[in-house]
Amino acid sequence: MYKVKVYVTLRESVLDPQGTAVKGALHSLSYTEVKDVRIGKFMELVMEESGRDINELVREMCEKLLANPVIEDYRYEIEEAVAR
Amino acid sequence: MKFAVIVFPGSNCDVDMYHAIADELGEEVEYVWHDEDDLDRFDAILLPGGFSYGDYLRSGAIARFSKVMAAVKKAAEAGKPVLGVCNGFQILLEAGLLPGAMRRNQGLKFICRPVQLAVENNETMFTSAYEKGEVITIPIAHGEGNYYCDEQTLERLVENKQIVFRYHGENPNGSLMDIAGIVNERGNVLGMMPHPERAVDALLGSADGLKLFRSIVNYWRETHVVTA
Image (cartoon, rainbow over all chains, first blue to last red; front, side):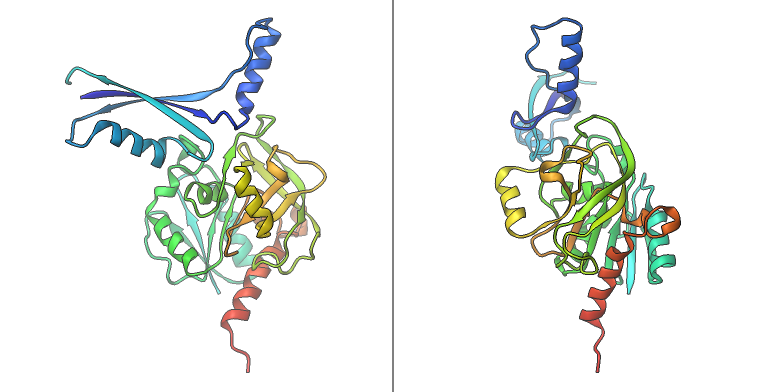
């Protein structure tokens, strides 16, 4: 069993309206150190071994469904989880 | 002429769409549930607005894998008119039937009000009843209508005259080039954020959307009805 953590964010070239609003809010709380905020999604998948390469599987799922490659980038981490 | 209104779990403009076709246009129309796989009996396909699958993950991301979407793709490839409004537009983008993607509105708010649109291209099967440059009033109702595509795609959209509607006067959501609606290269798939089906009767504030549906019927008659 694997635990897969998937992070999806808007691409660098795409303006993130939510991130921009949150940055403004942090600045108004006087955290002027904050230069940029990007908001994304975090997904946790628990996966069984199937004989297929886990990296290949995760990339395929990200490109097909979990991220929209037109505007989003993704990265992931795979942890070997304990069975059950 | 026979229209299909595709219904996904979470669609909520399907009834308005049906009403526009059945009562205002006077054409045949049928609801089609998302798990059907055959649309051969229809001449035009309508994907209504709403929140298919609760907009989970991304608007339209899950609906695009519905069984019926393979049939919608087939209809598009056959050259039949396919119209996606609002969430329907988002589904067409996710399905790759139209280029680009939607971002959250620039102001982050869900906006529900009438807006003005300019008809950029009146040489499509969806807009032939309008004048070029005609300014029309159609309501919008969306939180994610901020159209985005990369530069090369935008250039292609401009070159091929695929930008059909642009917001006029003021851009409510921050979309690139004030884009409100685009067609595919072939011109038979239209996606738009504004709701023409909510603007089919002056009593409801505007009847400007009616010409869009009339254009589709005119196109179909020209290509299917042989006149002696």
